[in-house]
Length: 274
Image (tube, rainbow, N blue to C red; front, side, top):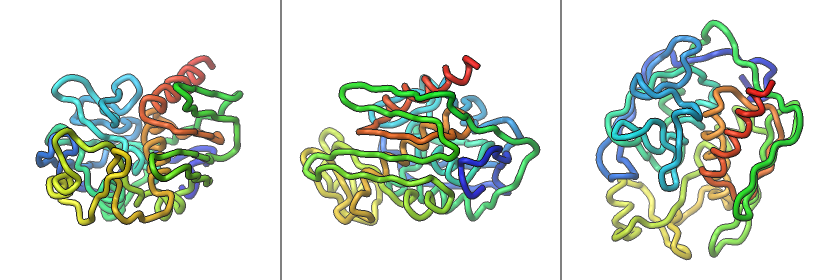
């Protein structure tokens, strides 16, 4: 699948299992995840219990979770973005811990292991959601708007303290995802009682962090607009909770997980109204 905009998308899973170990951003404790091939139509399922859909998803802090209570899995958006970018529709995810491994804060570690495992086509296909008209959600000066289109294209404008505004715009193909988005790392506020140096040590990062206006960012960015690109990664991961690709042109200003989820819920209502 070169483009997420394809009229129909073949169902795909992994050819063989992939395993990742690392650290939870939530607890700084060790966690691991096993990504296993799944049957056609099963979707992306966590711990044999929670299907990654809007019904089972929510937002905790600045991350997306799947599930509720002690069995919830935190920070699933990077894996979900990797699945969307690589065209994986069906996957069993077993998580030992409270969250998925943080890696370097991007979705590159998921992409790398999934590419090693390979993909296998499954029976059936998924029809992308084509909009009948514009869809918009907004909150506190931020918004996400979508208009009908024959392709999936994103324009994201974001402002960051101390850095001004940046724009990322692209038709999201597999190639663009792999080359322009998968390596973009997250950023956030420093956990209480932690310094940038202690966060680096506890997460086992191979790079330094710096503080800007209360936010932690990689000291050396991989792209001048890396934080904006990561906003797009998060948006792709949250959009994957829809369970089908979207065919539309998106305009996002200062998006975040809560706004992303509201947007996906609105898309789901549009879908169910037909």
